[in-house]
Length: 359
Image (cartoon, rainbow, N blue to C red; front, side):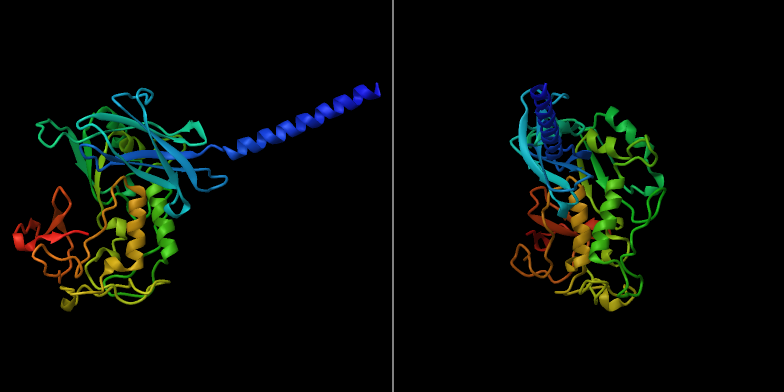
């Protein structure tokens, strides 16, 4: 009888060990929560894919696999896979360029947890650009100004029915202002006169990252997940505008950066009403200030765009070898992305000696 009792006791101990191991394994492969998916900047043979994935109970870097298939909405036939990863410094977003694609082709994609492929994102789609010598019809839409006051953006739910080849998003992809359930960001600076009072670099990263995340989250529980359907329904070509930069001093990218602000050595800006600041010969530019670059980094973290760098005014030469001496606030960039022409009063200056090379 005693022997039998010991046997049961040992079995109970083994059961406890097995349970502990099972819990440990489940913890090691905890499910990630995917915010959504997006794609963009498609050419005839490549595109950018994006997602955000995090285990909210234990945030950490996570390995992902991007799966992509041509003409297969289930992403199960002739699937290509690409490794990806999220990191805390990009607010757990992941972005990669997939290549060797076929021109003029509809692709479907999703992300999966590299350690638990059953843990997957929703499926998104995009279409590669036609071959350069091909004549092809296009179906596209364009808009801008995603003001949080109109969240959850009711029209976004119709995007899956439109069958767009692409969507052109003409800036203001978020607003820094308050809306339902979304506090305003910490004020980034003062206008028109500059001040050293404003958001710190950490506040800028935290607050603006939140604003981008909210574009994928319902305003009310169980409601439409804002722009998530739009992002998944086609590839985008996206620009930024003033609201991604706080609509204050940081929007003056070509102006002098000014003195210190919060925890940063520059970025307070200058008084734009003073005519001496109409032309800035550098080398001090607002787009080199830490705050500007933080906001640019957050935008790049959350948009499916290639990271091409910016024109280095005063450093990058023109095509004739002479240096640039004035700031470029708006430019027309050639399709090969090698040249840029300044825009004056909405008109591109398409003169050979005005072409600027891009780094």
